[in-house]
Length: 621
Image 1 (cartoon, helix red, strand yellow):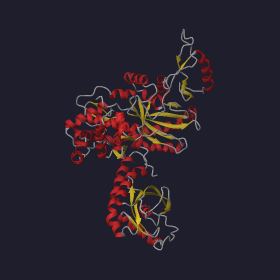
Image 2 (cartoon, one colour):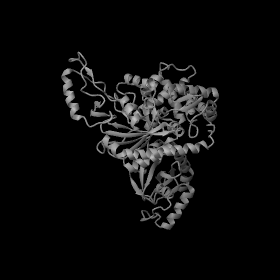
Image 3 (cartoon, helix red, strand yellow):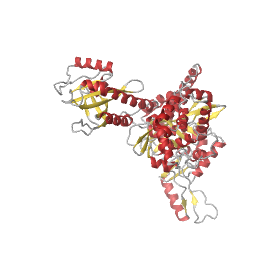
Image 4 (cartoon, one colour):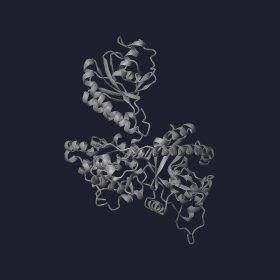
């Protein structure tokens, strides 16, 4: 790798070491640098100053500026003053991997149903070299609940899924794991987990005290599972704390076990038992029970039930929930078999050309030398993969992206070098590492957060207040708001609730309901519609026209126009409005001038929402 490009972090030390390997002669350097910037932004939880990116990547500031300008043009980052912020559109890279994988589409509903039944968090994970990555999370809303996100990478030895995946490792994988453990003694390459303590050194005077403390804290662990003594020390049944002293030890220091030292034994036990436990290996209080989901004899993913010791001990989790987990796994494996049978009878899909050439040409013309065409092309190669396109050869990638074969080949060589694709018999596949490109911080993005920059831009263009709201029963609740600083302006705070029937926001959402609640229609102004039959006729027109205009029905002097926000399936989940004093514009001017801008803004919000919500539920607030 060029000396001014720091290797990506957050992928485990062995992964980082791979990134520092000799760069192939045909690799695309701008693509390597662009991915390094995305990795740094991901590790920084989605936002970093441009100077911070300069320091963390080792790139020249001018290079960082060009990379972020290109990513912003692609819609993958948003430039907010001196900061670069990851944008929801970036999730299309991770979506390409998840779509090609098929597992979320086939198994998410099973995991969600299991979580609802057990009232515990349930996750699906895949192996990623010597770590595991989550591909689905069904979490419970509690004061203490699971905080891991889709795409988060965890060290295999500190999880319940890890030993199960390791049952399929060979000598090469075990060697890589040992190398990473030695090179990264605190798991700093895994930002999603608390740091693993360094090996603790004790002298003779401290050893007996430590034995007593371990004996007082040890629980009845089984199967070699590590047991938490305190935040910085774990011991396992297989690693006795009172082992005999080495000859001549005397008062000399000796190494005590640390998290993951018993991983090989746990793997052997998982191979025999067919399941694995995590007894507080990530952090005190967190316990998990895992089983593999197999397809064609291999582990496709691992499903885990995650709880807290305030509700279950690890042993109780195993004894109580293992039978139900076995049933869920059997149903998931049956789903995979049926899908495989159906897919074998379905013709393979071919992706339509992406129109990349036209877009890059226009972008180059607009941004000039600030636009890095090879970076944009390289990232587009990832999106060539998807549902029904898990494996592609070079020709198919070139056809899907509209790139020349030579250009597609160089991009694939680069992505393979960085670990984002694998190649076998001239066929390429995406790897789970693609989820590390922004997916973890973006996977918790709410609709209000998705909409916020778009609302700001619209308010700045129109110089009027813009709001986002959701429907809660027969009321609207404001979840996003950008106000103007006029003397006469609409002042409403986020969280405010208003009756839905006399508002434009409420009417576009009520119009989507088969039976809208139209009770207690009180006359708030002389112009408020209070007759249910008349209001139903208004809602019919709103449904047909796709917008609502309310003129002084909520408050005298207040005029508002609103458009619905629809999720991927077409259901209305929110609405956006522009509100103003009636002296600012006539009703006709609102329709002619404001409505087109409002619809365009909502279209951009929906595009981001559809990308962000393809494999996860986007919170409305």
